[in-house]
Length: 233
Ligand code: 5GP
Image (tube, rainbow, N blue to C red; front, side, top):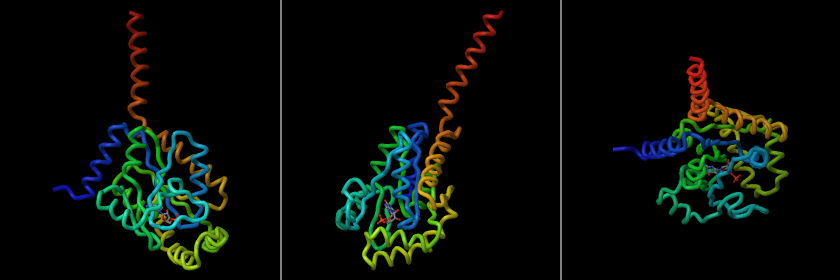
């Protein structure tokens, strides 16, 4: 009898084999206010064939946030129905609210060979790593606690209680850095975005991700060589 995790792993592996491993999952985490939203936006504007997974959440929209763009904002009841219907690839309680990644959206993107960025908390990143060994994980580290506090305060979108909760959780979150493959210091948004785009490009160039394409090209070289040596006979 397969456990739920084993079933999900088999499902993910089948998807990634079906598309020859072309669609890469990038998992990006940082404490709230770490600047990952801005970085991801810049990278999406810079790098072609890259999409973003819009999560579901039970938290209320902030000023300027649009349903379906930053998040799909749903009630706790709806979220729980989605959990029961197994619609989430992962979900977690974060800062007393529920957040989750829609399974269907991710499958669709990677099965069409598009790379996708998932912006999740450290629990979500751990769940994705357990499901998909070849997911690429990136941690965005704010340069200091003080700068994080200033960013959260100047954002001005959180109530004093929410701000306090986010700051209280930040030290625990940053302590998960070692579980990630890449760490980007977010001291300068331009530099940090360039670094994230470079990671995407470098991961795309890995042999393991383009082996079948490489083989085809190399086989064509070999066929040419054989053709040449036959004509020399
Ligand atoms: P915020 O409310 O500030 O937008 O996000 C709070 C936290 O929830 C952030 O750490 C963010 O990365 C995380 N988060 C956003 N979407 C998801 C998701 O789909 N799954 C998980 N596990 N965390 C998420």
